[in-house]
Length: 394
Image (cartoon, rainbow, N blue to C red; front, side, top):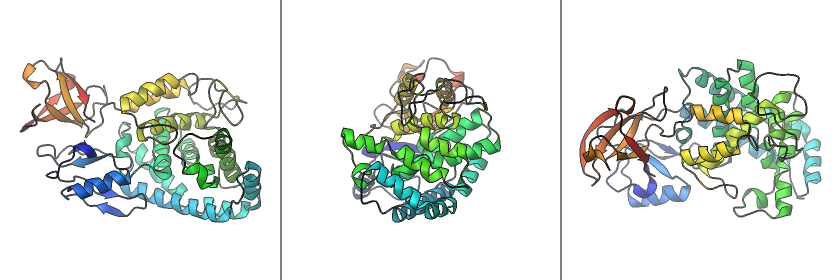
């Protein structure tokens, strides 16, 4: 299968994957021919690309780190928790103090909804699936095939954070605390008024000040819940702090150190929050989240994240991210730009398999000439053949 941009899909193409709405409802089943009305509907719903069945690429199956049913379980639990919190916080005033007062007054109800949700169980499933992977190769585009929303973003951030935790050889308990912190890191946004959460253009100074309070709101909801570890609550409070001290809400600094266990570090950003900050920045760039960022290609997003390392983000965690993110994910459509055989320049193909030893040299399958004539697909192991270079077709 090959991942095509919605704009490049034609009516003769057959859908290679089932597509679901964020609610878990089936939208289109694999095997449908994507007629124009379907493509328009998908685009309106926020789908940017889909997997297409291409003869000769049947063995190309982008693998998700987390199975689809576990992702849907988490999304359903998050949606239920968010709805219950909104009902428990009848926000009539937009002032930060008014919201904080409501959170404290409704402590009992909020704790019940947060600790009583299935998110902790789903986080444990996430960890189990990640720990069972022979190696970590993080393909964000395959984490969730639903349109980008707050829940999808939180799931992507959690999986990315847990993959980084495994990279740093965290214990199971550390992974669990990190995962609970990551899935709840933006919980405070639920306490913001719709005028803030649904805005797509730039914030006014007053709106930005209120938005930044979501870190405090989330921390209050989590920290007063005995079922949530303090280390997990710290993620909600500190994920917008910066290494150089220019972040919020407290302006504390980081030390750009590997996020290893060290109880002597005080008045610095918690290591779990540093990991989530990197995961948050990366997914925001990949998925696009208005008004903060548009969508970027993987290589462009990585360049931006690298530039943020040291000042905004922990540089050691950024290095770890680079080591697990394939610039050319399995299923991605590619075009040959240089080849030892000149005839192959311009040919189109697909990334068929990752090369964990060198993510820049995957296995590819070529199936179409530069003039878009289908050919008998053939495999090229780039690690074994010099002189090839290619680009992603987006």
